Image (cartoon, rainbow, N blue to C red):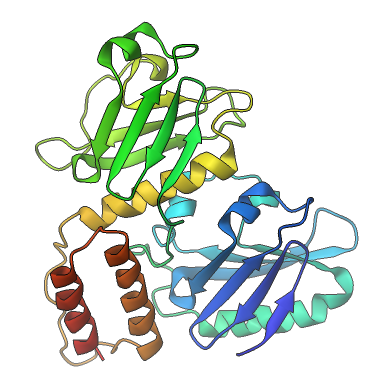
Length: 294
């Protein structure tokens, strides 16, 4: 498309295979948007596009909905974000409704044949490590490979003090559970991997007693701080899982991958290499596989 659509708090720049969302840094811009800065969303990561009146009088909202499993940020949020903090909503003045309708149609036309299906891998990059934030009972850090919990004596339970500060390599994790600090019981809990590769099925009790979790509270674990970290950990966990999908059948009737899709996936793979999540050898081998799909 090659066009730009400027709205309230963000601007969407349309490319041939993706839309680049740039968020403003104004005082009225949601802090999550400011923390994200910008995000590139491949069209293959979207499931549908909607245009509806905004909650504020005199506005319309262009809303692109991601496919389940395509965006680690949305996957980690698990439906807990307020509409105003949804990075896939572009709020526009009502007088631009005709233009918004045009772009909504263009986006719908760009959706791939798998738009209605769950994505088998992340198609949108998570915020880059290193990341950190303060919870009520400890400081959480993630360097791309290890999640660290350092307990605060003013907030941590005796059980956590007894367990000591914690370090969790990504390879030992099966997922992340994020509960918004804007709700009662907000927390971040790491789901450890069992011998079968699945999340451990054990009773961890209350989060304030579980050394694999931290508790949020007023002024602690804020959405714009804790959710990006949760998304980055989730992306790293998924990237560390073995690819058991098997070889791709290139027989008759199979759709060849689009060059733009391959370029975006190689770019994402390069980001994982730069973060230390894949080795140079793994990057080279996977890049060769991706180029072979053209």
